[in-house]
Image 1 (cartoon, rainbow over the protein chains, first blue to last red):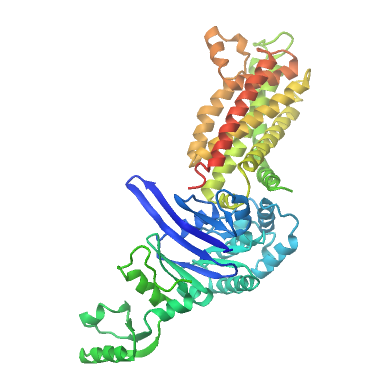
Image 2 (image 1 turned 90 degrees about the vertical axis):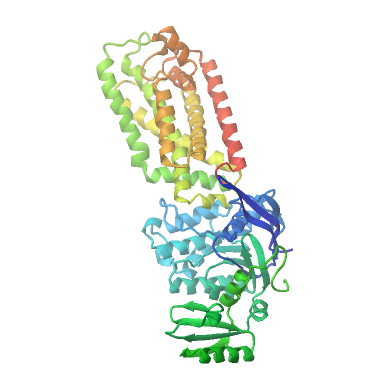
Length: 312
Length: 251
C-alpha cells in the first residue's frame, strides 16, 4: 500500500475573473519509506496539493489517500498518519514551547508523551527554550517548533512545505540530519522546496509540477541522467553573440551553457573563440537538478499526460 | 484524554492566561453599572413588590455578564486563530465537528459562569443575595451561556476580520442584551415595546435567571426555558453544520 496516493486530483478556484484551475488530473504514488520531492515554480500547485492532502482544502475532483485512508471520508485516520509542517510561520502567542507541543499532542489523543517531546526538543536544538513563550522566539526557533509540532504525535508520513525558506544554515543542517534519521527509521517524507540542491541531496524520487500538472516524475538519478549531460560554466565581461546568448543562463558575469556531449562542448568553445569572447574560470561539469528543472519548465511542448522520465 | 478535552483545556487556559482582560475587566464593568444605576435609581424605581432596585438589578447584570463573556470567548478565540493563522494546528488534527463544538462552547460556558460568579461575589456588598429557586438560576445560566458560546462560534466562523466581530458584538449582542430587561422590568414598558421585548430571546434568559433569585418573573419560567432551549438547539445545529462543512475553514 502506498504511503500517499493522489488519484486524478483536480482543483478549481472560483475567482471574480472566472475559474482558475490550480490542479489538473494529478496522479502519483509515494511509497512507504520514500523521501519524495515535489518541485515546481511558484503557483504550480504544490501548496494546493499539500493542502488537499492535509485536509486544509478540498479537491474539486479525484481522491487522496494516506496509508489507504481517504482524506475526506476517513479523515481522522488519514490525519493521524500525517505530520504537516506548514509553510507560513504561525504560532499561538498564549503558550510556551512545551505547552504548545503538549496541546498539539493532545489533539491527536496522545497524552503524557513527554519523553518524545524532550527528544524532539533536543534533536531540534530547542531544549533550552522549552519554557519560553512562543512570542519570545526568533523566526528560526519558531520554525523549529513548527517541525516539532508536526512530529509530536509520531506520524508515519511527514510533509514539509518549504521548511527551509528563509532559514539559516545551522537550522537547515539540524533539520535535515533529523529528518533523514526519521526517514532511515521508516518514516515517509514528502518535501516541497525551492532549494533544488536540497531536493537533489535528499530526495530519492521527484515529481515536478507546472501549471497544475505533473510534468516530470522519476528517480532523482534518472532525472539528472536523462537530460543535459554537461554544463559549461565561465565568467566574462563581454556580451555573448546572439546565437549563444539565446542558449545561455546568465547571472551577472556568470554564464552557463548546456551541452549534450564532448563534441558540443568543443563547438561551444569554438563559437566563443571565433566571437572573440574572453572567458575566465572556465569549468565543465555535470548538470545539476537546477539545470534539469529549468529545462523541464522551459520546454513549452509539455502536453497533459506526457511525462519526462520513465516513471517510477 | 480525548482530543476534544485537550481543546477544551486549551481554550480555558487561553482566557485564564489573560484573566485581567477576560474576567477582572467585565466584573469591574458590571460593578460600575451597579454603582451608578443603583445609586441613581434606587429610590425612584420600584420593579417588583418587596424588591429594591439594586437587588433587582444584580441578577440582570450577572446574567448580562455571563452572556456577553460566553459570546466573547468563542468568537474572539476563533477570529484570533483565523487571523494569526494558527488555526491550521487544529485543522490538521483528527478532531470532529462535535469535538470543536463541545470544546469551544464548553470553554465559553466556563468563562461566562466564572465572570458571573465574580460579579455576584462583588455585588454581595450592595445587597444580600437572594436564591429562592437556585435551580432556575443555574439552568438559565448554563443554557444561556451555551447559546451565546455557540453564537460566538458562528460569528467567529463567519467573520474574516476583527472589525466584523466587533460589529456583531456592538450592533447585535450589546443592544439585545441591554434591551432585554436587565435594567428594567419589561412589564413596565408600553404594550408595543413589551411585545417587541417578547421577540428577544435574551429577554427570556434574563427573566428566567432572575426568577431563580426572587421567585417572580415577567413570564412563566417554563416558557422561558423552552424558548432558551430552542434557541440553543437552533444555533448549535447551524454551528455544527458549518463546522462539518468546513465553512470558511477549509478552502
